[in-house]
Structure formats: C-alpha cells, structure tokens
Image (cartoon, rainbow, N blue to C red; front, side):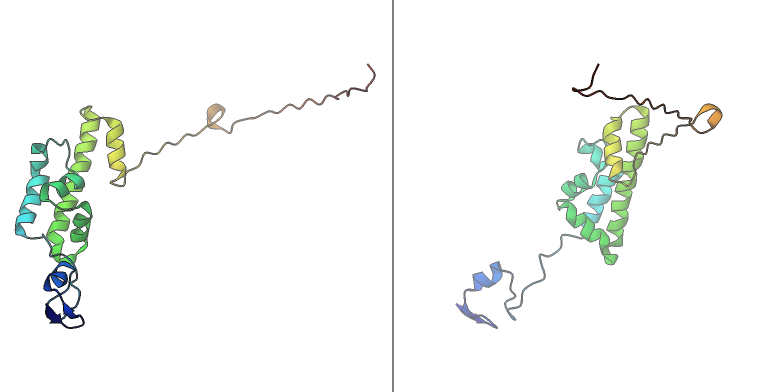
Amino acid sequence: MNSYKGFGIIDKRYVANHGYTERTGETMAGRPTKYNDEILEKAKEYVSGGFLNQDEEVPTQEGLALFIGVHRSTLHDWASQPEKHLFSDILEECNQRQTVMLMSGALKGDLNANIAILMLGKQGYSEKHQQELTGAEGGAIKTESTWIVQPVKGKDAES
C-alpha cells in the first residue's frame, strides 16, 4: 500500500485501474490515442482500394473504422481536430469515392438503386418528387361544382 495525494492509503493497482496518475492523484483525460502515421497509411490504403480486398463494393466509414481498428465515432473525433487534418482529408475522400461509386454503379445497373439512394441520403443527397397539374393549354384547372338540394322526408311526413 502506498500513499497518493488526495487518497491517503490506497492500493497502487486501484489507482492504475481507475484512471488516476500516480504522482498527483488527478484523473487522466482518457485513453491514449491510436492515431499515428501507421493508422494514416492504413486509412489511405483502405480508401485507395483496400475496401475491395475486404469484399466491399464501396468504401464506407464503417468499413474504414473496422479496417484500422477503431470505432466510427473515433473517425469523426479525429476528423474534427485541426491537428489531424490529414485524417480529415482521408475521411472526406472516402465519402467522395463512395458517392461517385454509388451513383455510377446505380446508373450502370451494377448496384441496387434503392440501396444506393439510401446510402446517398447519408451523404446529404435526397430524392425529390414534384408534380404540377395544369388545365388545358397550360392554364388553370377548371372545376365545376353542382349542388343538388333535395328535401328529406322524415318518418312522420305524409306521403
């Protein structure tokens, strides 16, 4: 048993296993990042065609996360940090390649159009239907209403 600032007598393993530093007893900010040059190279490999070796039709953020061994939320965390702008560029390239491959694959008939539409929705694309009704020669639609009012005879009315 050792004494740590703010803890009194406490087991060293407890301190290590519960996220405290040995010298000060302060909590650590979080796990060390996996981000490094090797991760960057692996991410580039995936986006540049490595997804095909994973039996994937198009690159996806989920596939990239699995390929480099992190959670999808980690991809977004890294991409949002200015000092990791290279990773942000790779993630953007992944999204762009996905968009192009989905569009061309659906147009050629190589990919299911409904799935492509669904996936493109995550890229900000949407399907819009617009219908305009016009009358003869492009004018307004004429409507006619005819009202017929007939008296209703009750049970007690004479026939």
